[in-house]
Amino acid sequence: MADEKNKLKPLATGDRTIPPEDAKMIPVFIMGREYTVPETLTVMKAVEYAGYTYVRGCGCRGGICGACATFYRFIGDYKLRAGLACQTIVEPNMIIVQLPFFPANRPGYDLENLGGDPHEALRSLYPEVFKCVGCGTCTRTCPMDIDVMDYIALMKRGDLKGAAYKSFDCVLCGLCASRCPAQISQFTAAMFVRRLYGKTGLPRAAHLEKRVEEVKGGKYEKVMKELVAKDMEEVKKLYVDREREPDLAEPGKWLPEDKKYL
Ligand code: SF4
Ligand code: SF4
Ligand code: FES
Image (tube, rainbow, N blue to C red):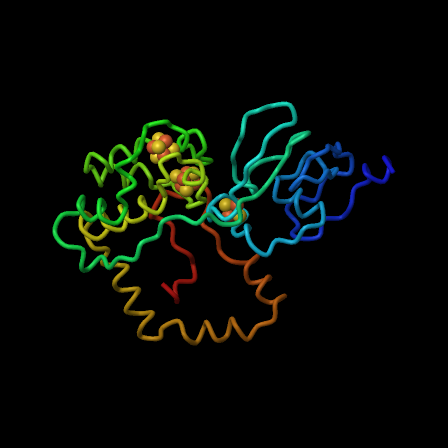
């Protein structure tokens, strides 16, 4: 049985984390059950290795979409830790659970009709922001190392531009909100503030307006239909062969050789 546990299984999905043949096998606990997985895997791949299939809680696999919010503890350690399943490497005796969704406060609003004072708009949509007790749990929980408590403090002070910039790297995972004793949905309030600042504090992006007009005018209809008609292997090949911006390209300077869709 022990040998069986330590044998490497092929991974069910993806090709990015095929474990090396001599990968050490370690015990982890996924939703309360023990599994033995290669130590080289991310939590996400370990969950798949253990036989689970993601139907939610997995998106970009690259630390961008925030779909894979995860809590974990180590056996014998009281400390609750948090991370993104696609970015956190498994360690022995991790007890793991993913947060598939968090019921955050998401009030409806129309940015065109909010009235004059943005700070008042924030107060009326997210009154709980003003109840922050400054405990810092959100900042300690954030997998993006954002000073969440600080952007909430900026919101309270009415510095919405500061809060918009400070929260810019938020991936909307919801981990901060799930731990807040004041029941603040920091990430949805921050999204509102960024939208508001984008609308009222930043110059309009002329190139984006042009692109929106092109989309509305049907410039991409034909190529979209052609893409949809292709089979999966063709789409994969197109994806793999696509022109890519070099890692060290000067920001804003690189252009692809094929400019017909620009
Ligand atoms: S601010 Fe909150 S929702 Fe955004 S990345 Fe950090 S923990 Fe996740
Ligand atoms: S967890 Fe909630 S109460 Fe604590 S600092 Fe963050 S926003 Fe404020
Ligand atoms: S799957 Fe998108 S951040 Fe993890």
